[in-house]
Length: 474
Ligand code: 5AD
Ligand code: SF4
Image 1: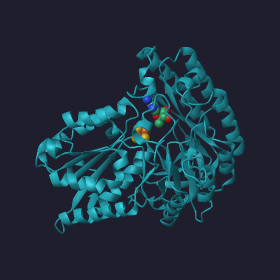
Image 2: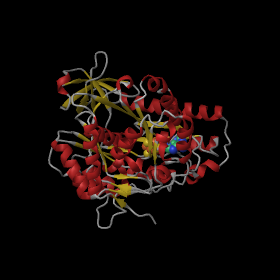
Image 3: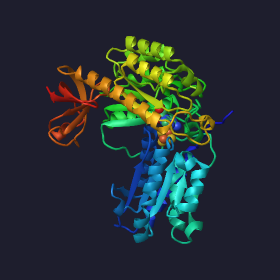
Image 4: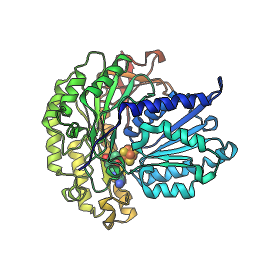
């Protein structure tokens, strides 16, 4: 049984005091800059917002340019080997900068940093890294950075700070945050995962499921609405099990209703849902709450019952299809997306055909397709592979071709329709300078005044491709 570790407010206050101390290290008028580079999922994006919040409180200005940074934080993802290789490549390439600027502090954090073997590798082979800490340490980043600044440059390897306590999970409230943009906001409602899907590293690096209290989530949502955010996404590895770890706390559909009932002009979304826990109660809440958008990301991972069982997913293809039907019945205009893994150990051509059949049956609006990546320490890592790399690549290509054809067709069907969209960006290139989202979360490219970011408008769809729609503001 795991114990929830709530960080006392005094401990957070200590971190604030450290921020003030670090700020005093810099002479008046001297500008110090920090860069936070994020890999992986929205949960990591959310953690990076806290890291930036702490950095701001320590007196750092944010930059996107490595050359002008005094602190570079790389917030890593461990979900697939490819992501890890990219991190090692990019961290390694900072050596040139570090040679020119020895006082540069390089920090590696996030999911990779929670893994013992990765920390060893960084210790031994990436000596330019001054600070390394796991996701459970984000709440005390000021303390760690202060240590790194204090020992920095003095004694090479010995001066480096490594902090990634084996941890089941902390809950910390009232951390500072620096959010990007002013339209869309992530709101983390829980952390960690209890599911132990056999391929997945997340439960090992992010610890057990722990929910934030109802009142804390509502307070943060109110703050976001008051600050003008128009599109709020409730975040968790498995939002459907929200609240189960807290006696007397409401469940996820209740939270959805409560946030949705807050006054203000905003849209509400959530991710990610696990099919084993997505209930009719959830779909009913989605359908009934005016501010809850008709968007559901429901990762299925495979269409073969045999593979689903080996993945420890807790549902069958048939049950998944029933859920899709129930969700579509409860939520008109629902946009459904999914994640799919090909090449799981033991997957045969027949299993793969069942995956294709499921994709045909559901007609996902869009799909994220991944080639299975063996993660040491997970249950599936011990299973023997049977398909060759070429076979798996071929399955991947066939699956993406099918998924793309479906997305393209679904998008083409939107031509001539009018949608209520929220303009969320003005960084587009070419004639279509604005980006917007439909209620279902589809991306729409529009033309118009950059000053309209944050506005709700009606867009008439004039064109589309596999990934997005094009339209005109009415
Ligand atoms: N290999 C490939 N894909 C993976 N995912 C999680 N673990 C692995 C792995 N070991 C995918 C799943 C999940 C998404 C976030 O990443 O599809 O839903
Ligand atoms: Fe990557 Fe998973 Fe960590 Fe997100 S929680 S950063 S997907 S390993």
